[in-house]
Amino acid sequence: MRNSGRALIVATLAVGLLGVVGGEAGATHEYIYTPTTTRFFMRNDAPGCPGTPFLSITAGSGEQSCGYVGGLPYGELSHTGAPVGSTVITYTARDGVPTYLDPTRDATGNVTVVATAQTSRMAVGQIIVVVTLKAKSDTGQTIVLGSHSSEAIVNPTNSAETSFPFTMEMNDAFDKVRLDQVTVDVDIRGWHVLTGFHRLDGQSFLDLPAYVRTAKPHG
Image 1: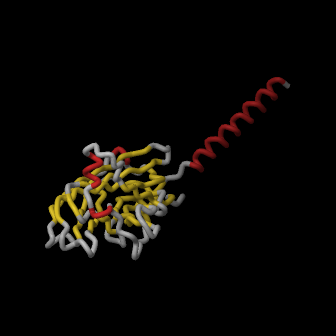
Image 2 (image 1 turned 90 degrees about the horizontal axis):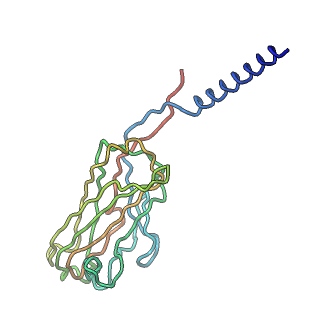
Image 3 (image 1 turned 45 degrees about the horizontal axis):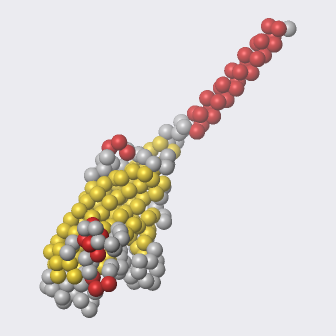
């Protein structure tokens, strides 16, 4: 009886272990990763400024171009210690996530800066645009994926609208990492007047190199 009981226990354990292994095998799929590019548009869904900045895979229309009163260089003042607070605008994804990062390609995009119609003929000075790309992984880790700075000198002949394209090299260590959130920080700096307004309406965006992940068919 003791031997048969022991055999029964061993058999039960074996079945249990097979069930666990089978459960793990069922949960651990093989996946196919197909490269794609997700375009996130920088948007603002409030009628006034600063509003509620966000990222969306759908472009907006007629959205407010936010800056600072008089197009003054508050961004540069903030970085030189003036008591004006942070001027960084953070855009957080509302859709298009989660996604899987493809670091074999660069993240690219554009930020468009405009002067208001009333001041574009007089806007002048240096504009510096600093873009920082961040994400939150499925483990809750905040990852800085890259940063890019570019600048332009504007004058009354070219200040109506200025594009600041950016490119960021991705880190191979984050290959196929699931990103549950994506954010873009935009800081408009430089000594300028009557400009520095951030244009949206599909003119400012991020192109994120990503993968579409699908389960590999069995058999």
